[in-house]
Figure 1 (cartoon, rainbow, N blue to C red):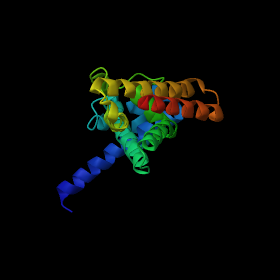
Figure 2: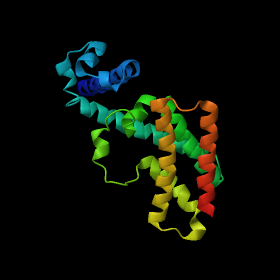
Figure 3: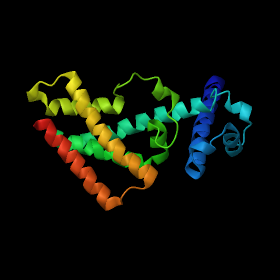
Figure 4: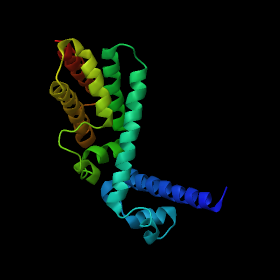
Length: 201
Protein backbone atom coordinates (compact mmCIF):
# COMPACT_ATOMS: atom_id res chain seq x y z
CA UNK A 1 0.00 0.00 0.00
CA UNK A 2 1.39 3.40 -1.00
CA UNK A 3 1.85 6.35 1.33
CA UNK A 4 -1.18 8.18 -0.12
CA UNK A 5 -3.38 5.16 0.52
CA UNK A 6 -2.08 4.83 4.08
CA UNK A 7 -2.72 8.50 4.76
CA UNK A 8 -6.24 8.26 3.37
CA UNK A 9 -6.95 5.13 5.40
CA UNK A 10 -5.77 6.91 8.55
CA UNK A 11 -8.00 9.88 7.77
CA UNK A 12 -10.97 7.58 7.23
CA UNK A 13 -10.29 5.82 10.52
CA UNK A 14 -10.01 9.13 12.37
CA UNK A 15 -13.30 10.30 10.88
CA UNK A 16 -15.01 7.07 11.95
CA UNK A 17 -13.52 7.35 15.44
CA UNK A 18 -14.88 10.90 15.79
CA UNK A 19 -18.38 9.81 14.80
CA UNK A 20 -18.30 6.75 17.06
CA UNK A 21 -17.07 8.83 20.00
CA UNK A 22 -19.88 11.32 19.37
CA UNK A 23 -22.50 8.58 19.54
CA UNK A 24 -20.90 7.15 22.66
CA UNK A 25 -21.18 10.50 24.43
CA UNK A 26 -24.79 10.90 23.34
CA UNK A 27 -25.80 7.41 24.47
CA UNK A 28 -24.23 7.99 27.87
CA UNK A 29 -25.12 11.66 28.48
CA UNK A 30 -27.58 12.85 25.82
CA UNK A 31 -27.24 15.15 22.81
CA UNK A 32 -26.92 18.27 24.97
CA UNK A 33 -23.64 16.91 26.39
CA UNK A 34 -21.91 16.56 23.03
CA UNK A 35 -18.90 18.84 22.59
CA UNK A 36 -15.71 18.87 20.55
CA UNK A 37 -13.69 18.77 23.78
CA UNK A 38 -15.41 15.60 25.00
CA UNK A 39 -14.94 13.94 21.63
CA UNK A 40 -11.25 14.83 21.72
CA UNK A 41 -10.89 13.36 25.21
CA UNK A 42 -12.36 10.03 24.14
CA UNK A 43 -10.27 9.58 21.01
CA UNK A 44 -7.22 11.05 22.74
CA UNK A 45 -6.61 13.77 20.19
CA UNK A 46 -6.63 17.51 20.51
CA UNK A 47 -9.83 19.40 19.79
CA UNK A 48 -8.18 21.36 16.90
CA UNK A 49 -7.44 18.04 15.17
CA UNK A 50 -11.16 17.29 15.03
CA UNK A 51 -11.72 20.52 13.12
CA UNK A 52 -9.56 19.09 10.34
CA UNK A 53 -12.36 16.58 9.71
CA UNK A 54 -15.49 18.49 10.72
CA UNK A 55 -15.92 22.26 10.60
CA UNK A 56 -18.02 22.30 13.77
CA UNK A 57 -20.34 20.22 15.92
CA UNK A 58 -23.22 20.76 13.52
CA UNK A 59 -21.17 19.15 10.75
CA UNK A 60 -20.79 16.05 12.93
CA UNK A 61 -24.53 16.03 13.60
CA UNK A 62 -25.25 16.37 9.88
CA UNK A 63 -23.04 13.40 9.06
CA UNK A 64 -24.55 11.24 11.80
CA UNK A 65 -28.02 12.15 10.53
CA UNK A 66 -27.01 11.27 6.97
CA UNK A 67 -25.68 7.90 8.10
CA UNK A 68 -28.86 7.32 10.08
CA UNK A 69 -30.99 7.84 6.96
CA UNK A 70 -28.81 5.42 5.01
CA UNK A 71 -29.15 2.79 7.74
CA UNK A 72 -32.92 3.28 8.02
CA UNK A 73 -33.35 2.98 4.25
CA UNK A 74 -31.32 -0.24 4.28
CA UNK A 75 -33.46 -1.72 7.07
CA UNK A 76 -36.67 -0.84 5.22
CA UNK A 77 -35.39 -2.38 1.97
CA UNK A 78 -34.49 -5.58 3.80
CA UNK A 79 -37.93 -5.77 5.40
CA UNK A 80 -39.65 -5.24 2.06
CA UNK A 81 -37.62 -8.00 0.41
CA UNK A 82 -38.98 -10.59 2.87
CA UNK A 83 -42.54 -10.39 1.51
CA UNK A 84 -44.31 -10.82 -1.83
CA UNK A 85 -47.69 -9.31 -0.97
CA UNK A 86 -47.71 -5.50 -1.28
CA UNK A 87 -49.78 -5.17 1.88
CA UNK A 88 -47.32 -7.35 3.81
CA UNK A 89 -44.42 -5.38 2.37
CA UNK A 90 -45.92 -2.12 3.55
CA UNK A 91 -46.61 -3.47 7.03
CA UNK A 92 -43.08 -4.91 7.31
CA UNK A 93 -41.52 -1.64 6.14
CA UNK A 94 -43.32 0.38 8.80
CA UNK A 95 -42.51 -2.18 11.48
CA UNK A 96 -38.85 -1.90 10.45
CA UNK A 97 -39.16 1.87 10.82
CA UNK A 98 -40.60 1.39 14.31
CA UNK A 99 -37.84 -1.03 15.32
CA UNK A 100 -35.15 1.33 14.02
CA UNK A 101 -36.52 4.17 16.13
CA UNK A 102 -35.94 2.24 19.34
CA UNK A 103 -32.85 0.24 18.39
CA UNK A 104 -31.13 3.40 17.14
CA UNK A 105 -32.88 5.80 19.51
CA UNK A 106 -30.19 8.49 19.51
CA UNK A 107 -29.90 8.57 15.72
CA UNK A 108 -33.68 8.71 15.35
CA UNK A 109 -33.88 11.62 17.78
CA UNK A 110 -31.26 13.48 15.77
CA UNK A 111 -32.75 12.66 12.37
CA UNK A 112 -36.25 13.82 13.24
CA UNK A 113 -35.70 16.32 16.05
CA UNK A 114 -37.33 14.33 18.86
CA UNK A 115 -36.23 16.06 22.04
CA UNK A 116 -33.26 17.61 20.25
CA UNK A 117 -32.82 20.46 17.75
CA UNK A 118 -33.27 19.30 14.17
CA UNK A 119 -30.09 18.83 12.22
CA UNK A 120 -29.18 21.58 9.75
CA UNK A 121 -29.24 19.23 6.77
CA UNK A 122 -32.87 18.41 7.45
CA UNK A 123 -33.79 22.08 7.56
CA UNK A 124 -32.36 22.58 4.08
CA UNK A 125 -34.81 20.12 2.55
CA UNK A 126 -37.87 21.42 0.79
CA UNK A 127 -41.02 21.40 2.83
CA UNK A 128 -43.08 18.22 2.31
CA UNK A 129 -40.24 16.52 0.43
CA UNK A 130 -40.07 12.73 0.76
CA UNK A 131 -36.74 11.31 1.89
CA UNK A 132 -35.07 8.16 0.59
CA UNK A 133 -36.84 5.65 2.82
CA UNK A 134 -40.11 7.48 2.20
CA UNK A 135 -39.76 7.05 -1.56
CA UNK A 136 -39.56 3.28 -1.09
CA UNK A 137 -42.74 3.30 0.98
CA UNK A 138 -44.51 5.69 -1.38
CA UNK A 139 -43.77 3.34 -4.29
CA UNK A 140 -45.51 0.47 -2.49
CA UNK A 141 -48.47 2.71 -1.64
CA UNK A 142 -48.72 3.64 -5.34
CA UNK A 143 -48.74 -0.02 -6.35
CA UNK A 144 -51.46 -0.88 -3.84
CA UNK A 145 -53.57 1.99 -5.17
CA UNK A 146 -52.73 1.37 -8.83
CA UNK A 147 -56.28 0.49 -9.90
CA UNK A 148 -57.45 3.86 -8.56
CA UNK A 149 -54.96 5.75 -10.77
CA UNK A 150 -53.82 7.90 -7.83
CA UNK A 151 -52.21 11.26 -8.45
CA UNK A 152 -48.73 11.93 -7.06
CA UNK A 153 -50.31 14.35 -4.60
CA UNK A 154 -52.65 11.66 -3.28
CA UNK A 155 -49.80 9.17 -2.88
CA UNK A 156 -47.79 11.80 -1.06
CA UNK A 157 -50.72 12.57 1.23
CA UNK A 158 -51.22 8.90 2.07
CA UNK A 159 -47.53 8.54 2.83
CA UNK A 160 -47.51 11.54 5.14
CA UNK A 161 -50.66 10.26 6.87
CA UNK A 162 -48.82 7.01 7.58
CA UNK A 163 -45.64 8.77 8.64
CA UNK A 164 -47.49 11.20 10.92
CA UNK A 165 -49.12 8.36 12.82
CA UNK A 166 -45.90 6.36 13.10
CA UNK A 167 -43.70 9.29 14.04
CA UNK A 168 -46.27 10.57 16.52
CA UNK A 169 -46.53 7.26 18.34
CA UNK A 170 -42.75 6.86 18.38
CA UNK A 171 -42.25 10.40 19.67
CA UNK A 172 -44.73 9.86 22.49
CA UNK A 173 -42.74 6.81 23.57
CA UNK A 174 -39.31 8.39 23.20
CA UNK A 175 -40.25 11.50 25.15
CA UNK A 176 -42.88 10.27 27.61
CA UNK A 177 -42.30 6.51 27.71
CA UNK A 178 -45.74 5.76 26.23
CA UNK A 179 -48.13 3.07 27.41
CA UNK A 180 -45.94 -0.02 27.48
CA UNK A 181 -44.98 -2.53 24.80
CA UNK A 182 -48.27 -4.44 24.72
CA UNK A 183 -50.46 -1.38 24.20
CA UNK A 184 -47.95 0.09 21.77
CA UNK A 185 -48.01 -3.00 19.58
CA UNK A 186 -51.81 -3.02 19.53
CA UNK A 187 -51.98 0.67 18.62
CA UNK A 188 -49.26 0.18 16.01
CA UNK A 189 -51.05 -2.77 14.39
CA UNK A 190 -54.37 -0.90 14.44
CA UNK A 191 -52.79 2.13 12.77
CA UNK A 192 -51.03 0.12 10.08
CA UNK A 193 -54.07 -2.05 9.35
CA UNK A 194 -56.41 0.94 9.25
CA UNK A 195 -54.32 2.96 6.83
CA UNK A 196 -53.58 0.00 4.55
CA UNK A 197 -57.33 -0.73 4.46
CA UNK A 198 -57.97 2.91 3.51
CA UNK A 199 -55.62 2.61 0.56
CA UNK A 200 -57.80 -0.08 -0.99
CA UNK A 201 -61.12 1.63 -0.23
